[in-house]
Length: 246
Image (cartoon, rainbow, N blue to C red; front, side, top):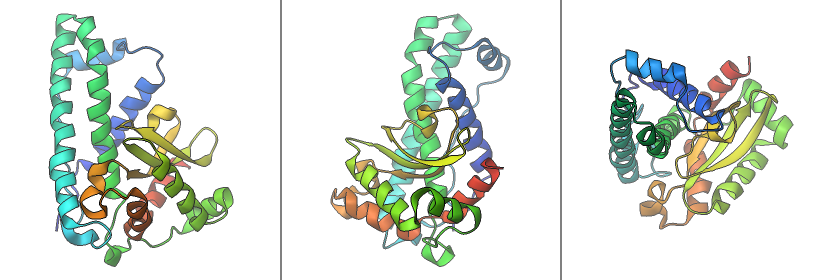
């Protein structure tokens, strides 16, 4: 059994805050505070978080083979490239190379976003024997009924949005902290939800890249979206909602 490392929520929160700050800016230039932070501290690198369950624990909804490849290969690749881009950024800032700093923003956004998104995704899943698929209770269950009519209606809307997304990306259930309501959004590639607005907090994200389902569902995305709800960890989403909506 894989256990959560202490990395989990703290690092994910830190990364989301960093990208939320970037999303509010109209340019790709680094702010003075960010520059001072990087210059004054040793370069920090990131590592692959452990899963809170075995690779095969989500079967039959998600196969163990897919989970292992998704975690060890795809997520690890994002982390490797993210660390590389951060190292190059650190060097460029030390040299005062503004052109390289700007050029690195896309790599940082893509690979850092992949790291953030997948770290959330693993927590959004849970084996059936540990509560995966059980409907949300408490405040989140109530607000879903209020905003969407029912959980079934929410699932249908998320599945429709996820199936219609062209190319690769993510479909999200988020909390708009400014408007104090739930929203359904899609993001392209590895863009985190915060790129759609600085006040958006992800409660649930579903990866609709082909690598998340191709081997098992033969590239039939709607079948994957239908079955993933059997292992969705609504308890985690509820905990985030309670914290962020307070």
